[in-house]
Amino acid sequence: MPVDFRKENHIATVTLNRPEAMNSLDPESLQQIKEIWTEVKADNDIRVSILTGAGEKAFSTGTDMKKTAAPTECMAATYLKDEPMTPMPYMKMWKPIIAAVNGYAVGGGMEMALACDLRIASSNAKFGLTEVKVASLAGINGTQCIPRAVPQAIAMKMLLTGELIDAAEAYRVGLISDLVEPSDLMDLAQRYAERIAQNAPLSVKAAKQAAVVGMDLPLDHAIAYSQLLWGILRDTEDRKEGFTAFSEKRTPQWQGK
Image (tube, rainbow, N blue to C red; front, side):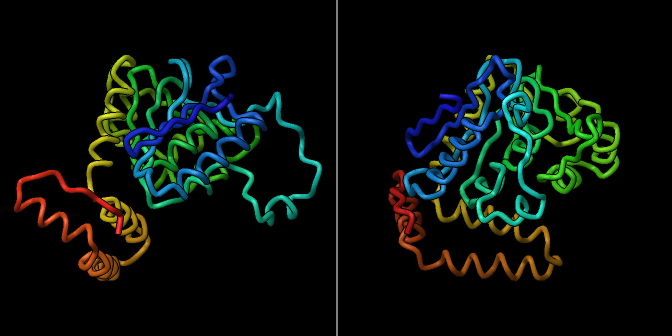
């Protein structure tokens, strides 16, 4: 299968598994990854996901142009489809997603990484939105997400030149949170996923929602919104369990309700 999917201990691991094609997405893998993210979103047992690419050469280089047929319908019909054409809308959920980037994250691969909540990378990673070099545009989410992820001047340099930045520069500008050797990448991703999965699942979702929604609100409105989310959590069974477990010095048993 072009995309591997496994679930264990509340953690989903999604691996783009076409290393011979730089983990690019052909029609089969594109359909499969859409189905996987739909399953992840619906499965209450999954609390956090890791997205990575097989091998050390590439996280993903986006669409496999060699295996993707040219469009046969007008742009309006494509744009107004009820089913999104790309994986990114399927990744929109309140469960966190960790991108473990090894090798090239270019074009649509970079845009998938930008759709994740936490990005970590190996020392051989390279990042780029190279679409201007082939008369295209990083129009899925790249032009909007990169200025929100790194300083504006860095974002514009990447968008306008199409040049790649290496892992050290990505770490320096804050595109990734951690930089490790390739052999340590998945261990670190697993450790972060385990830490997230050990926390109360509704609280994790609320924390992500407060941060994501709040970024587009004036500060006072964002604070008020986060207070509403705090109130929603206040009377949950998990919050009662958290306080009880703390007083009894034991590990809480979360139910997600």
